[in-house]
Image 1: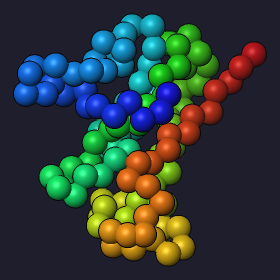
Image 2: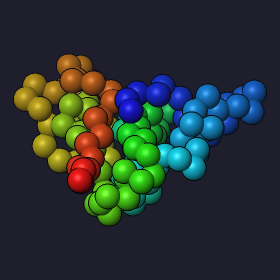
Image 3: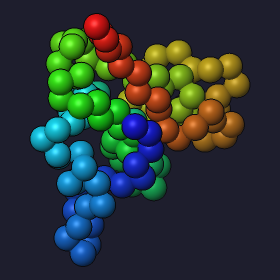
Length: 112
């Protein structure tokens, strides 16, 4: 779990540093339970891109304990990330200050 700091899409060399892990059939990227437009955890202003860099990858059997989607907390993203229209943390500005350019992923698991 955490910031894997790479994208699933291939780079200019035709590689993704995380595709094998995230696509492994023994884990589930629970963020994919959300609508596609809501699967972003990171905003990059340089390309005006909303993409996933932060992951929770529970085992498939553990993830199957609930059908619920995860929550992504975006209250700390800067105001320039206009796709998020919810409340921000006090003091968050257009670019700075910001709490982070990443958004934590939270997922409730039912453990027996």
